Image 1 (tube, rainbow over the protein chains, first blue to last red):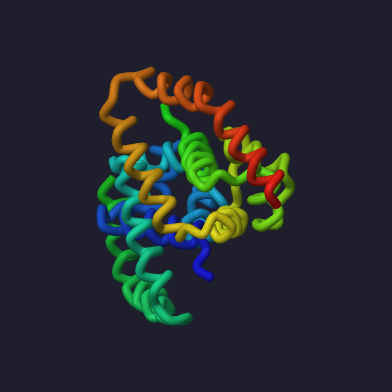
Image 2: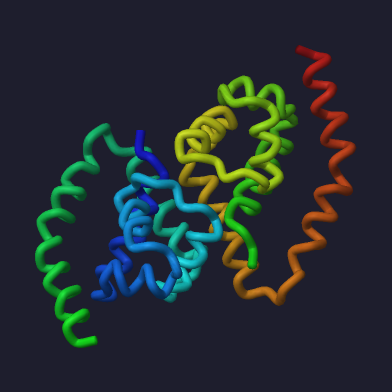
Length: 110
Length: 110
């Protein structure tokens, strides 16, 4: 079973990385702790409705848009055989170092 | 601000009423307490990812479909002036007695 909070976390994280922003930047803008945002992105914590709104605001995306992405991802997972989403996670981990580097550049430039 | 849990609650409730099913039926099928499901439907409680999956399963809808409805509703709310969604709530309350009657018929027939 694909957990909603996992897909929401992946979606928020992908959006943040696409903007080359750090956890620190987005958590500050959303007024949530860095640790909390990190846990939400990793699907380890359920984000409250208020928090999801804040994070989406901080990312400059409508909550409806984010949820549409989540719905699309879930729809694929619902029709896919079990385990097919694992490579996506691996891919994300594979690109993480580059994203971290970009994030570091942003912090250094601030 | 339109709260996600409120829209999710409205969406779940609309789906349940469209199927002429009672809170009791769906809560039993989803293995959640009737009170909890009622609070989720009224947007008073955040449903966990696991719970949302169970409720959607009990309703026979994919989580992705439910979230697509939620996204569509949010998209309207995001572009609408504040307060425009209130009549929807009034409308729901207005049709509630009929829905209750239908639900009662289902129970009586079971």
